[in-house]
Length: 117
Image 1 (cartoon, rainbow, N blue to C red):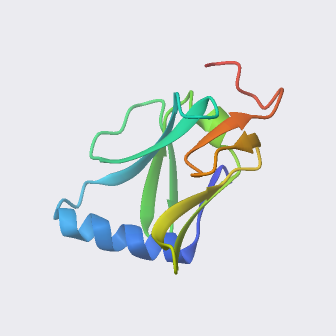
Image 2 (cartoon, rainbow, N blue to C red):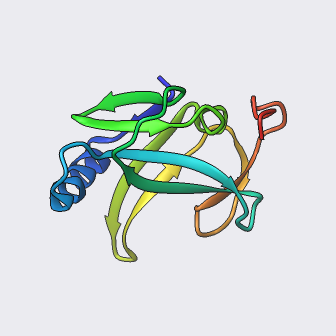
């Protein structure tokens, strides 16, 4: 599987999607240039699915990933964590050689299938 949602992340996403009151919305995860480590993660709700999007469904949540981003996101786990520092979505990326302190950007491992960027 290319993207994994934990039960905690799916529960929080389900709540957020329900608040939007649009049954066609899906979570879109993508990678773009920038951030302190070279690439940064992006999340948005989207009701448009492109033909080349990978569609992953877990815990009742549909996730869309574009064809370029899937190479960087293959194998990631998206979790939702609540602790003394607050609450946030956390990405565990086995393809990241390094990441910044905020956890929102990363440097891919060499040869990590990222030739498309």
